[in-house]
Image (cartoon, rainbow, N blue to C red; front, side, top):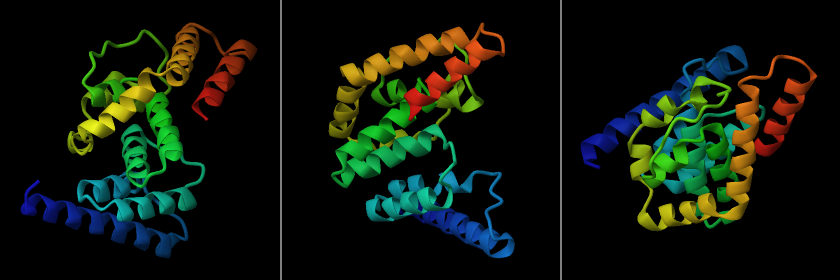
Length: 193
């Protein structure tokens, strides 16, 4: 990344932080329909500032405890935790990234991706999201870091949870609203947590 690119990222990051701070001062809460809150930690990662990223992710967790998040945010958060030596936390965030978009981790790892015939809970969960992720968020991963992610992704814990998730999401694509659908949605949420 060139110095000019870093300068632009730093300016964008400061702008996001300033706008969010002003929203909080003005309203007492954040009016962030544009999703600036999801870009702060990842932008620190692009600047190779892991401490700044960790601080941003801690701020996010404190300020938005019930936020469902977005896939690329979880992916960068996982990497920041891994680089900080917190492999357990990193694995949890990688799992969140995987469940928020089943195509994202394979995209990171350069695996072939085929669209699944399942219910996607939001547009963030669809194949097109993974296909159009901000490429630098993938490029910051080293080969060693990708090997760690691949080991988890192909390991029995992630594999069995992912297979169950897909089975439930497939059933949700044809299950009408009612008690059975509610039960399936609850099981899906338990897997995500």
